[in-house]
Image (cartoon, rainbow, N blue to C red):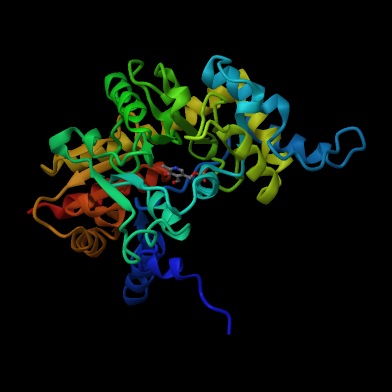
Length: 401
Ligand code: PLP
């Protein structure tokens, strides 16, 4: 019989969200009368707004015409690549430096192919689980000790360090996944912190994979939305981003990755050229329909809709934050991000998850699922219909006392 890839056995038992879904199912089966509300997963809930939706419909229609038909477009439509550079990066990148993807998560998984199993990996702790599990799949965990997460360092991000890691812990010549606004903490790195990150990366030979999937939720104009707002980042960073959370494209699937031409490996070879090669080898490009929707999203009407949609979820976040704080629970996030990170000192986060489900019939996400430093925290997600969020906030008062 064929042998199993040993790296699969190193993925954390049961990926976080399937485990939450399983516990929800079990609770629902035992309490069929309960109306469970989810403030758990980061899946969007609101319809795509009309201008962007028309772009998608028109994209599909065009494919049914001789003039409008298009086939493969490996790195993405030129107009979309140029549009992304113009709208999000003040045209600082050429189209060849912007690669259109079927979403940030997919590119996070593929990016590791550039470096292979022998590269040390560091993540913020807590962090979006795909950074660790994607690294484990590529063999990063087993490359050293052969067990556990030996090749992966966790850099604690806690209240004590303002949710920003101690950069002296970055491994030499390794990869560092950094997410801002952060999932799950909702923390956003300020300009000074990102400047320190770029300086440390340059000193240590680190390549930063900057995940900006929630950038459009930033409302404080002093906070950077991209690592490329920082001088010097072009030689040490790749940025992944997505239409999922700003435009409701979680099911449509569209994202992008910026790989600057100035980025080089230790041997001087171009990372950009290798990424183009990988995209052409194992990825045949994002859907042309999704890209038509992306183009509509970049028009002024579309950008207005992006702001409106993010404002809606930020409105939910504000309600949740107020409800949590009203219970005397300390929390961060929710102002420039759709996540609220609530602290339950001394408690096990799966136990708090179970208590909230039991008393309030509200599903949350246990912090421990995002890394060891997430223990004693709960992540509340602001993705939900307003009436459900309001109802969930009312029910949270049952946690009092
Ligand atoms: N990056 C972060 C930090 C996320 O939280 C998510 C989804 O929850 C993604 C990326 C995935 O984005 P996409 O839908 O573009 O794959």
